[in-house]
Image 1: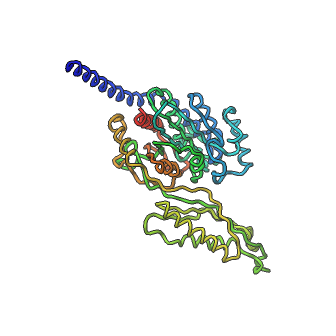
Image 2: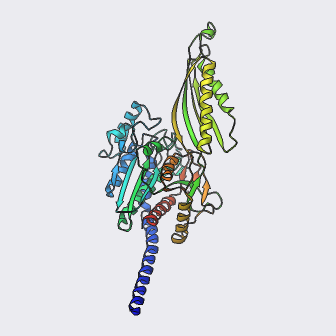
Length: 461
């Protein structure tokens, strides 16, 4: 009896060793699979870069993504199934949507997947890979471009090699073309290793991140409900010391509210009958000065900025219309709420000073975000142990900069007891983000696919 028990124990020990070795092999297999997709990933990224689309106009991009995911056998959601009706912000006018919808038909958008709802600005795609019982993991990839005109000279590689933007006034200057390619590459790898996974993977291709106007509409449609693990990433410059290849978590994205403020007054002859006028430009000027004077918060970072001011028609006309585009930010959602309250009060008071009226349209908003320490540690340990070719940043939970609406997604997951991280994937950049010469070392595509695929495998093996 004792001999039989010893024999069983040896068998179990051998099986455990083999399982451990197989898992070790699987991580390196994932890295090799990612490497084998280098050419296709580069092709996808350059296609997205050549045809950039700004928020709610990502029609060709969404149709291409839907087509690709469908070819992999994933369940695919588009249109109003992705973003909740009534929850989108700063949607372009109907004429702009219609013109772009017609334009992308001539730019290779697959018409089978270019739906009427996309033409109404319901962009973005959700792909679902079901692998039986197990946890639900969601991965987020933002896909929109910036309203910028890309450099067009031989010094700029995308122009020199023929993949610079063909959509004037639109450019992938932040790296979302890379994010889209990484998302599709990850979907391909995980679909090929489906039998090694247990659970469900959701691929969230988000529209309208620039201006923080897209994530909320996806969250409101329930795509983050029931999610156990969530991860997103952003390509980031590697020119800071000790940034490594992967930063597993970040915190401190500033909460924000962004507004278009319209002041309505009464026109009059400025020289003849100025007392009959109600000066909307003067109201906008009072607001601009007043906003700059908001007392900063003692508990953390607080910001306010008026980026655009327009109004009036001539020196001899009291202006009856004026417009501001402005924003407030805060290190926490609570600080941002304070800034937002004061900004709205000041705009209304400035209008009242000149007997004008004021209306404020919310163009975008986002809460602050904090990555889950447990998931940061798990990803750090996994990369160090199983993907030693990639370096984890010396600070695995780095402070973020700017604002990001991924916080809506992270907060929803964490409120339900799940874990969420917003990572960085480091790369060399030809020029900083949000500049007309922005470009990346496409090695980041392989790195991103390997990291995301290994993370999902580690969570769902």
